[in-house]
Length: 154
Image 1: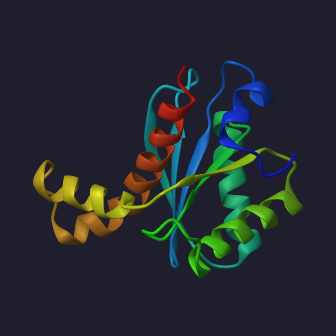
Image 2: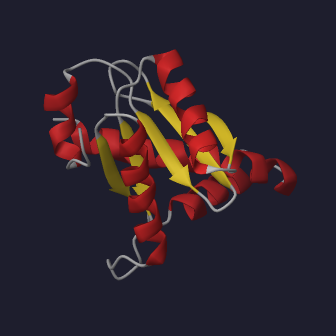
């Protein structure tokens, strides 16, 4: 497969099956997964970054356990809509995944996802700062994936 437009995913994947969403950080990768009907995204795991191959294998294990066949990667677009070094890094991560496994990969604008999740964890969930650090990347991945799933809904 290749990097595809988000709206092409349903035709490539069929109507059912989970999708994995990623929030790529410098030290961690937040992972979320959708339900089989692709309606709800849920935080799944946090991968502590080390070597790319190890990170990818950890991701592939999570995908295989849930029979997910696609990845949506959060694309950190600048507020003015341009793509900077972090976007280039996210795109490179996607290209490198394709070297290891043939699967569709789509990108979704993640602007403000971490800020929104932090705000929610502080105000609604009353989560401590230490605990927020553990949750924010997984929750941001779910936020990213939920936005993509909502866009896919007819």
